[in-house]
Length: 145
Image 1 (cartoon, rainbow, N blue to C red):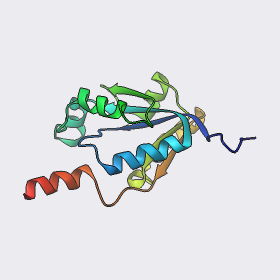
Image 2 (image 1 turned 60 degrees about the horizontal axis):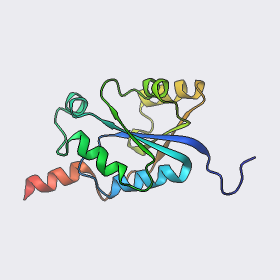
Image 3 (image 1 turned 180 degrees about the horizontal axis):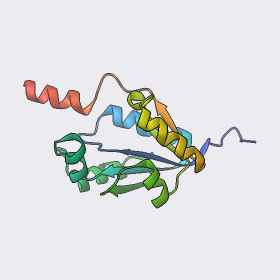
């Protein structure tokens, strides 16, 4: 039985680029921390971002990690320098729930990972995407000026 003040998960994980830190990032982090006692944030390396998004982040990895470490809701910040699979990350550093924006909800690969994580005793929870701000919107605004 869960106490009223107890959170649903012990260890939660967020993973992302967190470039040009904005209110959408903060909303995601805050919502994740509301659900877990300990929140780990995994940050993709500059090279992984280039590999997956075909562009380097504006803010280098060490600075993105330092910014995240200063956010009061974050308990630990780690770098992801190779495979960003949530299954691989669970094997490196187990967690109870992975949190993400709902822009990935329904994605077949993510649904497969969710089923695999459930076999390990973990889950994926999606939060509403912050519509008013994103790194892409910031990049577009800067290029239009």
